[in-house]
Image (cartoon, rainbow, N blue to C red; front, side):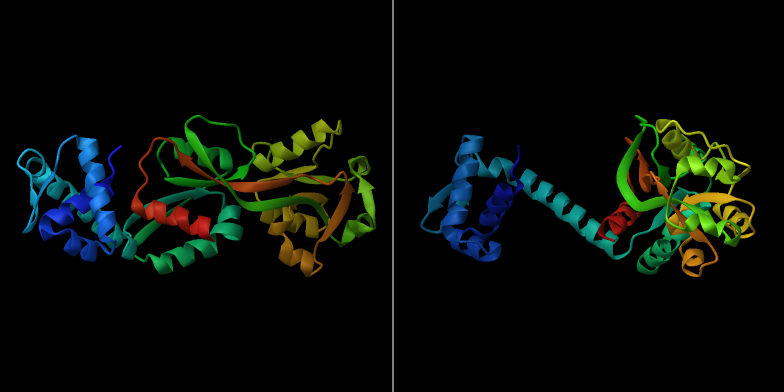
Amino acid sequence: MVNLELYRVFYTVAKCGSLTKAAEELYISQPAVSQSIKQLENQLGTPLFNRTHRGMELSAQGGKLIFSEVERALGLFNEAESRIAQMKASATGTIRIGASDTIFKYFLADKIVDFHDRFPAVKIELHTDFTPSTIAKLKENDCDIAFVNLPISVDPELSLRGDCMRLNDVFIVGEKYKELTDGVISLEKLEKYPLILMDPNTVARRAFDAFLSSHGIRLSPAIEVGSWDLMKRLVQRGMGIGVIPREYATRLLEGQALFEIKTDPALPVRSVGMLLPKNVPVSYALHSFIEYFRKD
């Protein structure tokens, strides 16, 4: 493996013509410079310098042969580092983000605004859809990154970058069924009440049905909806009992427009995950966006 620092020391000594001056320029000790030169000479199997009373001169059989190539290679590395530094100061390009309307509303909106304030030259496109459709768009290159409800099936084409937001599913009721909030009740007791659940094709509904099936319980919905906002409105009006992440109903629960039912067993915790396509180059703008979430 190429040790770039050894070649940096070689180049500096060659330019300075002196171990002492090279050490001063590199901010390391003279013995460290000398040791690096010896190490590189051992790796290449040839002397790189002739040590004279005037200082360090490139050897005809070693140093002079590689100097121009080393100079060119270090120049390319320096250019690459300068380009990255410049990009960090002003990322540009477009990021296409896919997520459900709810994930945008409760999780991404404020973060996207903050990111845009930091990188105003980056254009952001939002693609709203349910998780299954969002995943399809990601695989079809219609978006660059997706935030989806978990769990999802393992897909060899996609890379999951961890949990970004925890979702605690709970049963909620309005004033009409408020008596169910006294104490802890069994899931079986809910069989005689009308349930308002999400569409069967959503990840949230599939996770809920799988949980009930694992406990040998079957709860049939009276109403199926396509949005959490509609569910909350229907539950408030006494149309039935809803199942929703607590994080999506916090304001109404705190204002006592809705009430949470405690059950035994409690519904499992889910989460929102970040998805990226595998083997697809990541632009600097997208890399900056991903790093923003990691640091947050």
